Image (cartoon, rainbow, N blue to C red; front, side, top):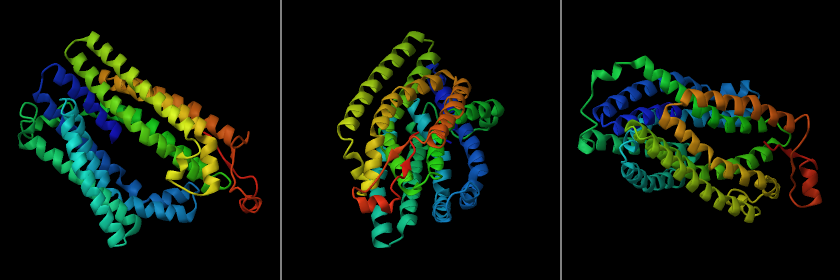
Length: 370
C-alpha cells in the first residue's frame, strides 16, 4: 500500500504545480478505491500467516505467534489504505504540518493506550497491536476530517464519480509504484526469513533484527527526504521548471548524505553499545558488534537511495525503477547472500563470554551476514 500510494505523489504533485487543484481531490478518491480493493485482496495473507510460515519451513512456535499477531493487524491494514493517500494528498500541497500535528497528538494517545492495555489489562502483544491499530485510525480520522471539513478548499470539492474515470491507467501507475517500493522493503523481510534457516537461528534472527531496526529508525530521515524530493520534483515538473527540479534534487541528496555520515560515525563509535537498547545477552551483543561495520555502511548508502527513489516518484518513473529493484535485490542481492551464508560459510561467531556458555551454544554457531 505504501508503494501504491506513491502514485499519488506523482499525480497530485504535478497537478498542484500545474495549478489544476480540483484534480487533487479526484486523484485522492481514486487512490482510496484502488488501495481498498488491493487491501481486501491481501487480507487472506493476514488470516493464513501461520499456515504460510509453516509452509515456508519456519518453526511452529514462531509461526503461531506471528499468525496471532497478523490477525490483530488487519484493522491497521485497512487504516493504511485510507491514511497513505491522505498523507500524499496533503504533502503535495505542502501541508506537512497537518501530518506532523496529527501524528504528534496520536503519539501521546498511543503511549497512554499502550500502557493501559499492556500494563493494566495485561493483554501482552495483543494489547500492543490493538494500541497501534487505535493510533493509526485516530491519525486517519484526524486527517480525513481536516480535508473534508474545509482544510483544503481548492483541492477538495466533495466526492465525485470522476474518481472512476481513467481507472485502469491509475491502477497501472499504482501497481508500478507498489512494485518499486515493495521490492525494496520485502528484501529486508526476505533476509530475516532466510536467517531463520541458519544454525542457532534465535541469535541470528535477534542480531539481524536489531541491525535492521536501527537501520529502520535512521531510514525515517531519508524517507522524509524521499517524500520531500518526490513532491518538490513533481511540483516543479508540473510547473514546467526543470531547473527547479534539478536544484531540489541536489539539495536533498547533499543534506541526506551529510546526515548519513553523522549516523555512520555514531554507529562506528558506539558499536559496542548500540545493541544494549534491545538485549543484554552476550551472544546477541557480540553478533551485533560484528555486524556494526556493515550496518554503518548500509546506513550511509541508504542515505542516498531513498532520495533517488523520490526523484523517480516525482518524475513518474516508477516502472523503470521497479525493474532496477528486482534486478538489484533479487537477482543479485539475495543469491549472493545465500551463497555467502551457506556454501561459503561466511558469518559472525557469537558467544556469551565464557567457555561454558560457548559450549551451550555449540561452540561455533554463526550469524549470516547479508
